[in-house]
Length: 424
Image (cartoon, rainbow, N blue to C red):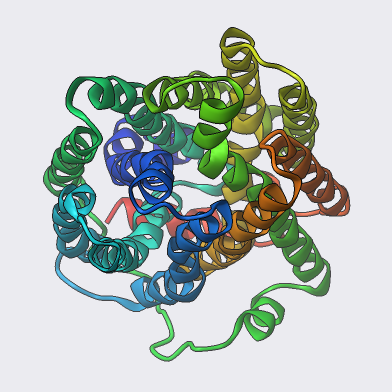
């Protein structure tokens, strides 16, 4: 039985545990699509101020997601080390998300938004850690493809379904439906996912900072690759998150769409990610994760440039579809490169590093672009900004030499440890 586990990916298990990421992707997509509109239209905030507010969740991601990722590595309960975070925090997030658009005063809106983003930062890393916890290294690109397929489904439901719900029942209806689906996602994970009861020895006290921890667990060449990869992640999330955050404002101002249609157009990007998520994982495993990500970065950059000039919603939709396919090549294969360097014991900690750099990027990118847009006076600059960020990510990644599915001297030992966990 254990030999068979080594031979293939457990698709059913991966699909079910992906509901945690599905719920996270769903609510964040609604949040990013509609909160800027609420802030700009209801509370009459400048683009720079909107960018500052939208960076709060990323500040919490920088501070708390690495902390709770590392903490979940050391957690021991009868439900496992990751699941308790989901069971406690997901219902709280659902309630806060539903009431968020009903806040009539800025101070009340900000209070609920800050509490929501804090609680989200507690359970996101434990949720993402479930897949590499139970998946051998060579199959983590394919596993991450399935996870991101479910996340993409959540984003499509958020952007497309949310757009229709907005047109039908106003801005509060997408938040209500997303809150309900978040609860249902938690129930799916609670009913069908069981974590192993026994884990390899994990140090009880492990509070080493990133720079020390990287050197402690990795050889010098892998340490260099890890740092370069994390900076590549930093730059491409600067570009991606700026587009995700401000696309609805770009589309309503440049393409003369209403908020609902702008959200539906953005859903084309997420839909392409859904369709191409599993193929992107297979391509990464077959031809190399690094090469696949480099191709994706070039593709997304080339797709974003025409947005500087277009004024057609149909062309924007088509470009979003192609861009989403290239983004899948980047997004699906990056996290497995990180977890391949970590080994099975420190998965939560290294995923915390991933989120540290990605959320640090997202923390600064919204206010930076907001200031640029206020200075230049138009939203076409959004895609110049994003293209530059992707080029910088490309330059970092070309020097990365580790993180492939067949890489690391400890690969066999790591996969044996994972296999033993899954069979307990």
